[in-house]
Image (cartoon, rainbow, N blue to C red; front, side, top):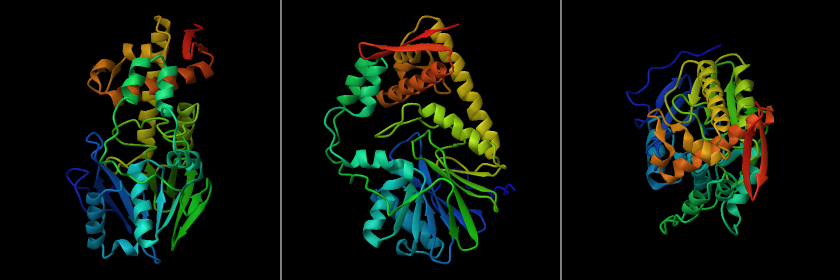
Length: 345
């Protein structure tokens, strides 16, 4: 069963509480990331109080916007019974932790997020994992640039802490007459989960399936070694289920989860082919391959991107090259701390 799409605001990120389905509203909360605009928080009505899927970034304006939108539904922040969080990125998780501190609200998140949550809360000696990975990709100058970006002294964000309980793959969360089935969908992060209401034809997809962009892969404190392989497996998992309305964390509600998954699979297949072609052309590191390719819908060169986007691009290419190596299409070995690739074809 696929639910009909309820008419949305002119722009998906317009503030307010937008109806999605009976007993479900979408609240977009603005983000300090212009390319993303906002994160969708979904309000699911329950006899014990509204349940929120994802929470927004812990910022004063975000808290005010959430409070204002809930008020239009007849709720206050203190009425929220629990947060079910799809993954541990700050735009999804940090406001849940902040509101737990204010009201004692119960917070749950996928069990697979535990390593990254614990790593983000612990003092770290040396560079981030992403800087280490960039060096392995042959992007030493970019690694130094990322490592040298000064931390904003006004950034006093609290460290991520553990939830009250974990969400487990295969679990069913009972909410009154509604049941939400939990599915582990690693890839975007190692512990990402989606929540599926089969009876209503709804998929609360987090960042696993987004309608306009392909999500980053493995950007977290403790990434897994083969995030793209996990991501493609997770796409197949959801594609094999009956189709549903797509309720993404970024972007408008979309009629078919299957249709968007098909587009994402096609995108990654094309990216795998392009990466393999660049290795055949003589580019031997992830950085070299990324620099030889174009990026964004405007087909920009790697050098034209900002440092953070260049980092994402290089790490995405490494993930693609490792999938090609796993498929036996490339040879891979490390030399001097840099991972190098060669074509078998």
